[in-house]
Length: 103
Image: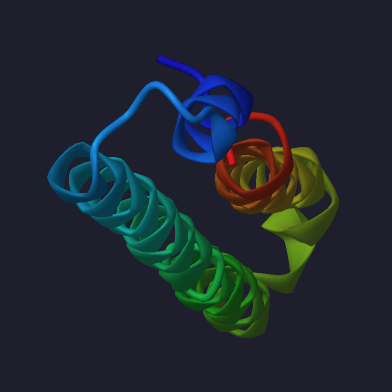
């Protein structure tokens, strides 16, 4: 049931007072669950920052230990950075979907 149909059902005069209250409670519960889900999805955006920090710190340690391997390790470092940031963008996109599409 979509949110608009619940609001339409609440406004219709065919519902009794008890049914009208139940429909409003259903809509409030659905909207609250949507916000909780979006917040949980948005909390995952900060986790890939740890992955990016670990990727670059490992690269700097490896380059400090063997400077001649630094050019060969840089593409792997950039790949790790890109994958970590892609994860952050996916979780942010899911949070936006839950807020604006399903809300």
